Amino acid sequence: MNKKSQLTNSQIIQAALSVAAEKGAGKVTLDAVAKAAGVSKGGLIYHFPSKEALISAMVQQLIEEAECQRSLQERTESSTLAAVLQTRAHFTRQIAGNTAMAILAAAAEQPALLQPVQQHNKDVMQQIQAEHGNALQATLLLLASEALIYHDLLNLSPFTAAERSALEQQLVQQARELQV
Amino acid sequence: MNKKSQLTNSQIIQAALSVAAEKGAGKVTLDAVAKAAGVSKGGLIYHFPSKEALISAMVQQLIEEAECQRSLQERTESSTLAAVLQTRAHFTRQIAGNTAMAILAAAAEQPALLQPVQQHNKDVMQQIQAEHGNALQATLLLLASEALIYHDLLNLSPFTAAERSALEQQLVQQARELQV
DNA sequence: AGCAAAAAACCGACCAGTTGGTACAGTAAA
DNA sequence: TTTACTGTACCAACTGGTCGGTTTTTTGCT
Image (cartoon, rainbow over all chains, first blue to last red; front, top):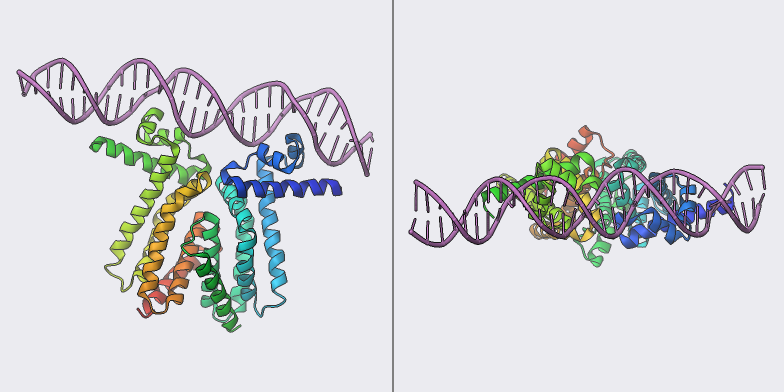
């Protein structure tokens, strides 16, 4: 696994994500991904010996990206909760299109592939509950923010872009005001 | 469309829901549904001329069921919000297994099929916001409750059953205390 | 009520296209 | 020589959907 290989590896994952975003979760086929990545099918299989491995890698990639962005926000926010909410407010608009369908693809294919996401969510939840005296209100804010993400995920948002944006800001605001 | 036909019709939908629940969203195939419903493939197609029509009917069924259960709760609750939260607390445990994967199947197949769900959500949201002076807190509670549902939907819940149950009760409690 | 014709409900073999995955000969670079 | 592929041909399984035919139910008429 040298640099070239790593590069191809991430090219394939990116291609898979964009296929999911552009053609829908149901259209993430090996052929489509190979074509989008500019790789032969044989090459794809060389890197990811099965579709399951590919989707698993996609999920992993999403988690790492989210974690990275959050740790950036944590430098300027007073609490983990505020950092998470602030990150999500940005995160959503930037790459939700990609991530949404990818996660959906994983879920439909094999729900077990989402287990890393669950673990990640659990960690965040526990850290935030430990951080705040008023655990209930903190949990509430976190859950509300998650609901907004799920709305994007399934294209189910009942809000206009403006409402949505205002709501996100209000969530962050409330998180900042919450006693730590 | 006589009684027999209507019966078969609903048998097929129920079968489709249970296939989705038991084998996962990705396994909702016409053959599987037909077999589960005790009908031939031809018979299935007679009732639902395409898979899209079938899934659309599934979604419709879910919405109607949810609406029905909620209107029951509204008799004993002080506000729509409290009724919705209370309904969801029950709803989830009873038929979430079925509904979850069904909605997922629809989403993966063709996101547009979830539009009725979006409309339904929008209606509920607007009614509740209109009902409450403190629209933000009401929205927060509603969103948090939705997040719990989405957790089930994707098997992503970070809570134990007990935590989850307690949380649901706290949501209902807060909704009741909220000024109307 | 009884009965034939028509319509609705249903069957299941079959089809064409797609999918994940294999196999393998060859190639370019490190 | 190993690693990292390309390219293509191929396959078995599965998928949504068709189609001609059969059974069941309803209808119209006596």
